[in-house]
Structure formats: structure tokens, C-alpha cells
Image (cartoon, rainbow, N blue to C red; front, top):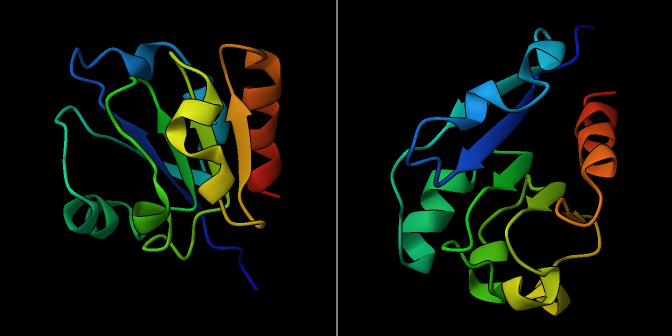
Length: 119
């Protein structure tokens, strides 16, 4: 049985630069990474966009993850935040099965967690 590739979303990459700054090539074959250069607002629209993803990398502080958004993400297992503290993203609303990492606090932990999610 072949394992299904981890679905990773990289949000708010409006400069289209994130693909040059990460260990994305190391995930080849284990993860499909989708880069979003636009910003989506509203819980319904954000939930619809992100529902198919197992991991989300929020590269800007624009996207919020309140409970009403997180409840629409049944596959989510990893939320990596950059550019701000996790508490401001609604950390208390995060379901137990979701690992939350503040990449500004520990970038190596963020990279390791993305790799571990594909196992």
C-alpha cells in the first residue's frame, strides 16, 4: 500500500518567494506543496480553500485561525506560524490532533515537524 502524499499549503506568499526559502525539495515524493500568492478572507472561503490540506504554513500575519476556521479543516494536523505569536492566531481554539509551531521561535523544529508529518 502506497502512502498518500502529505498535502501542504503555504499561505499569503504574495511575493512568490517562499518556494525559494524552505526545504521543499526534500519533501518531493512525500508531500505536495501548494503556494497561495493571494489572500482569502472569511471563515467559509478560507475553510473551503484549506480543507484538503494536512499541514498549513502561514507565512504572514494576515490569516487568522479562529475556532470557526479550524472546525472546517478536518485533515489539518500541523499549523506552522511565522511573523507573530501563536496565541494571536487563536491557539486555544486549535484541536488536540493539530500540532502548532511558532517558526519564528524555532525554525529547525518547524522543518523537522513537516518532515515528521510525512512519515
